[in-house]
Length: 491
Ligand SMILES: [Cu+2]
Image (cartoon, rainbow, N blue to C red; front, top):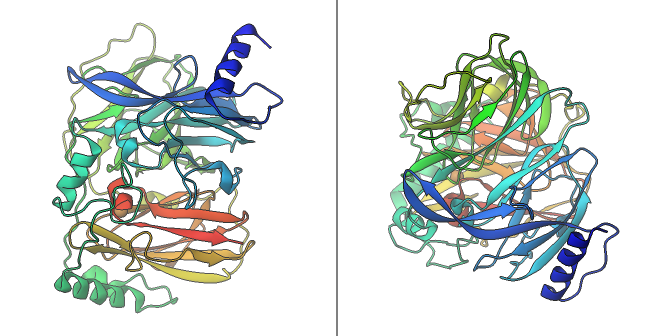
């Protein structure tokens, strides 16, 4: 043991009550405060770094996550290991009885890392203050490529509480989910008209039953659709805006693997690779058959692995992330040595469309689930009530008991969305396969977060292989904080 590691170990032991010794000295992961400058203005945000100040972890397939997490922020910390399907339920505080790591406290973890591009983040509105980091285990077959990690964020000079108050109209806030500080507001009421409209749409969407019918009645109704209900001051790629983007040095003729994480709290993006054609080789950290393109949607919580060949002639190649249904964008620049780097515009020439499932409709998992019928199909109706009350099957988080599932069961969740917004639905601890879009069966990608567009039904199949309670929620964190979360209880 190096002297430095010994000192670290001693410091931890004195700060924490008692922890069993590990065979190897745990790595440290520190949640702390830091200052950054956004558009010339200083802001106080959080960091999640190792002892050397490097965000998150970048390890190799097969390595273990043997880590001591230190809470040096001034509030309780609830971290989620997003995409870590090899970790058992007790490793994650983001679970129904997980509690929060108190300021000054230390948590120790030990589990095998799930290969691929994953991430870690606060399971509260602390994520809005950049409490998120990459959690990557480089695949054994990743090959001779240069890995470039890109973490996207939406940024506001307002506090998450202020943003939430703005959304709820100051009527309550965190209804049932764990909000920024676990505040409990008065449960928002439902406007009778809205509920009637919602039931009407649900009837239309569910009318087709299992017989390949994606809610034709609902889709033919002229419905308002919107995105970006939070107005942000900036969009960040690796903490920077396009005024001063990160320039990543790449080789002429080299191959780059972009590992893009959408750590945005309320924003979905399109990745635009511009002049370079990219090959999408994994989504949400799981391999898919290569699919080429220059524009790919990425909702909150999702990841995209894009393989790019740098032309032999070299140059500077911006990789943009454009906000859906808007012109604003952020990004990084891949540049070979000596390339001239032009000033980049923070707005695209054209407004982006809304994100949808067109990528999922064509992607095929490299390692899909075996073909078989699901043991059960569970309808999950996403709902929207007055005063920013977001529901699953008409309930906010805490109102409904966890969904009981037997270990080994294959469940198909059929999401139906009669609301006006897209919801990126995420399940903890498991990957699922997209098996149906708008009534059409397919063998789609394996993911852990799926876009559920307004007025479209999506089904995902999941094999529950680990006991415990697992959250399922919308990854628009203001929707989660105001109710759009439930749990699956596997026994
Ligand atoms: Cu949502």
